[in-house]
Image (cartoon, rainbow, N blue to C red; front, side, top):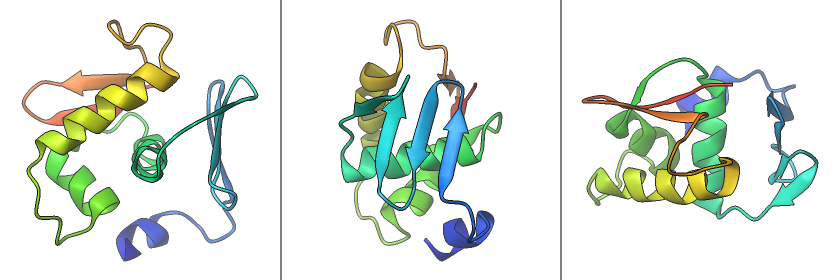
Length: 111
């Protein structure tokens, strides 16, 4: 979490990607100005993906950034949370345009 905090300047209070907007202080997410109901982990996962737009992130790296180094579960929990997130932010979760699967690596966020 400390690495994640250092990767974004302290003055950053909002992340934006297309019609998605994240209020980092209020921990609120919006799609086309409509508030999304995201769980704590979904919010953190989306923030990590948006901060690294265009970069393929491994499941292990996402586990470290979102769940912490000592997370005892397996990497499939990332897949489950990605699926739930896609259902909330994609127009068609079966044909994602924002959160792309990078085969053999993990996931990449596209604007």
